[in-house]
Figure 1 (cartoon, helix red, strand yellow):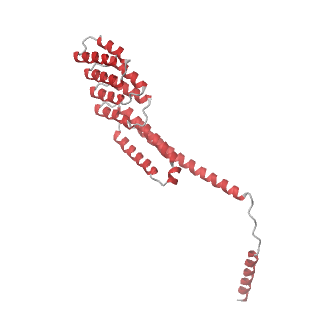
Figure 2: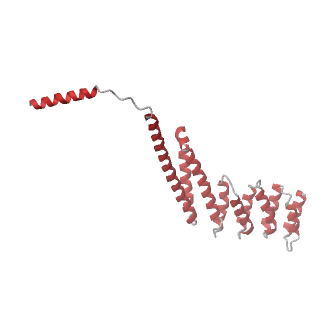
Length: 241
């Protein structure tokens, strides 16, 4: 019993002596080293986050590249990705700023996937799917040369007359683009359908494309040209001259 009391006294004295020890002043470089370590940790977290995000986008792009027949799956993915963008956009300002780069990258990828889907569907053997593909041009924030060339090819060579007419309407909406205007002028001599020829004549008047007059005059020289088309072309030449 006495031994235990002596041990308690020694322990008490030891703690009292430790409490009286002077507290060392922190090193002037401690704060700097701490912040450096913190910045390094944050950078590693951001790199890991960016890497995971890039992998996610790459996987989605692979779906669009290698599973071109599942157009319904594309629509579901695009809806999901649009929802993700909406989620980020609805965050508080401080969080929204932090995720701004991710949102921009995701938006860009969505547009790229829409373009890939549209180009893929233009090659679909079903006319209904090709019509849907043309309508998707309205959902693209920016129409590049690849899309324009695909639409012009469809206008000039698609076997379905309705697809060509709808494609022409889509191209007219892009009439401010010089590549589109030149393509429409060159398309005049490639059309055999009277309906498409008349629609192109209306398009040239709407766009006030005077360069088409030369093409129209050449078209008038074609044998077996539909009489109604001939009258339409002659009137169009008068309007544009």
